[in-house]
Length: 460
Image 1 (cartoon, rainbow, N blue to C red):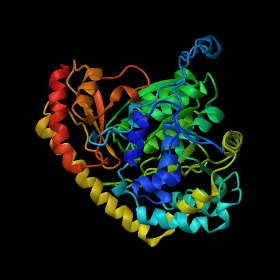
Image 2 (tube, helix red, strand yellow):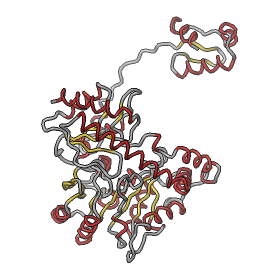
Image 3 (cartoon, rainbow, N blue to C red):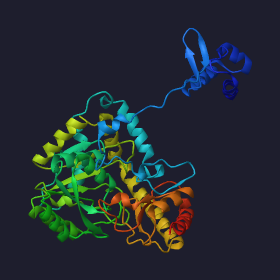
Image 4 (cartoon, rainbow, N blue to C red):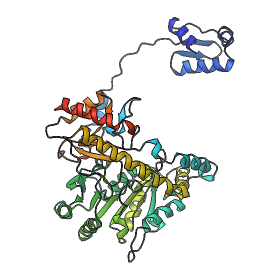
């Protein structure tokens, strides 16, 4: 009730509000409406209720500034702990053109399937029972079958026992880095690579060893050299639609890298984050060609089903599977059975495949529109590769671009972009930005490109 808020604004602190009955009579409102208005004012901190006495304008309490300086000594240095929040996680304003996020727009999600699946799952025992620590058997079997469908003859396919269900792939990375690599030990990674992997490694105390990776992925010789020189026993990579570059390894590149890790007795941690986001090619999981446990395979449904259904899986064979399971059990105990049941429901529906075909078409149109808008309005920017899948464009800006200033200039003009520095585990190889073509309002991509061009001019 606007009138009630206006009354409070003019009344002195501690003044008693009229009774609900009086308010109903004065404003011609129902008791339910008045009661709701009073509850809202209390929630906003404008009023306070005193049981048995009445409701009063909230007193203004003066307080001294809190002194948190003692925490500096108690916490110690934050160096290397990854305490920052990525710009990709920022919530955009209502009028902003959001090209920074790593999550797809709502219209790219199977909303009808998700809502129906959650409703059905809520009516089952999954809503009340504790899920197994390894995950629901049926969901584990689905992930195993998905990988097995890509497995050629002569290679033993994964089975459900090899699969562990995770509350999102980010937590899976943390467990793998702790359980497989270990604190203070080296981990070879592509450069650039997923910022979340850099963060997870920092939290686990893992030392990153970057190798350059371009439009076709890393050079296997560089990977071999890094493993040999550092003694690392794991290589983290995204062979399919890498974040941020969009690179997809060829089948031969996958075989060559797998041969390298086999020769060095190492693991390939394969993050297949964009498996369901193909556009112009099909996913080629390296794990499908490995049956002796060298590949630890991650696949998530968060981007393709719903960000609210944080369900993923890791496929690991041999003793390494048990080590990862032990870490997961100690960290989160189990994944919500309700979310697992809903995720399985979605991907088991015949409409799921139809949805993926529709998303492929939509992503292609968005990707091409954003790429063309950049070519027209930002000709100085270089797009080395139009990705065959995923959600983003990886754009090289002219040398000398002040990237921090560019991001600020874009934001002032109402465009949010992600600075490429977040994806480099060491010094950035140049001024890059990652631009998402999966966000809302693709009809504003042309406007966004023009505003980026203005911002680029101001930042040089």
